[in-house]
Image (cartoon, rainbow, N blue to C red):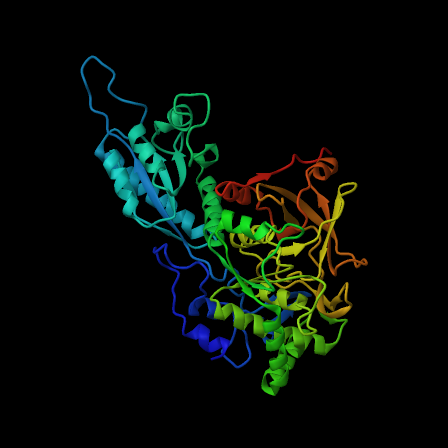
Length: 524
């Protein structure tokens, strides 16, 4: 059974509230969304090069693939927590709240539903909204334990500590929303910090909810937090095929830390097995004819310039097919190749990784699980490919990043122009020198070896040079002060993505015990 047949028999549908569904499975629907056709030799995540067209000097595709393959929607439970005050003679009888009648509660439930519906419409990532739950007593809060959902948006209008502590103890992610001027006033606008978070002390006492989880009035502040949790949901438990086994750059404990923090399911495929698959593929004339056809179509796309051999590109498409077969076998959309300097039966995996990333999957080299979890998280948060690369020493506000496996579909939609060159160190195979968009804002993540502190930077691309380094080179004008960046570098490899996702990554990473450090912007 080839990869197409295997994927077509997989009918898992991720639009479900069943949180027990494996995160790694790729459904038939998602396969079709990836833009692959059902003809022989097209892999699960191969790029359908024949669909590439260009206009006005920019490269476009007629169909944009699903850039979040293998993802599940975020299931959101809105909860209105309230209590209707009852008048009592000659004594205080009501707390600060605008919800003082059943009619007011009913209108507020409708308001919440409409606001969340609008958020979901503009979200840019899939989420499912459950009906608003009304909680005025602790048993009603406890009953939500039986409801399958990922994240709670708690509209904290009233009620008391028993109710809010019960909701916080359900073991779900919680975003607390309080109204100040966006509607009827909520009591917990006053009490959330001292009564709930600090529990009438001067230190934070809540283990599962913090100040970052509290939103006042602004629904967009809810949305980006949900986007962060969507990304986190889709990295936790993720299966990754590890060709040659998982590792870590000068950090043998990295796979264990990745399993501890993110419960990653790391599946080893020995290198001799890959080598045997390559040799068998080379002997299959039908397979090789298809790979040569795909290579020619890819190279015919506008914005693509060949500076290596067409045979090297065809063999990259062969490895692309074989990697797709492996990902289908293990029901995942993520793969990593051990090492950087060696080939698999004389095929360098660089261009293959580019093809997989551009089709919505995830492919990283060196098997470096110091850095790979950050790439998976950033990929699902952003809906864009993430670029695994080497950093250099910052100077005068600039920093160079380079590797040989850069994606081209960096904005998640269109393909950047590219020169197909050799892998630098070996001067062999096929790799990408991508002409990244100058002026483009980037997120840079630099994880530490201990999986405790990630550094997050932003900057703008000012050049894509062609120096004697790994092939896809980005020169970045850093937003942060250069000496501060130098003093706070940790780990080694970096992960890059178009756009600014620092706050989303920071919010998500803190949920698994990783602090994300940001630096103040440089003074003009």
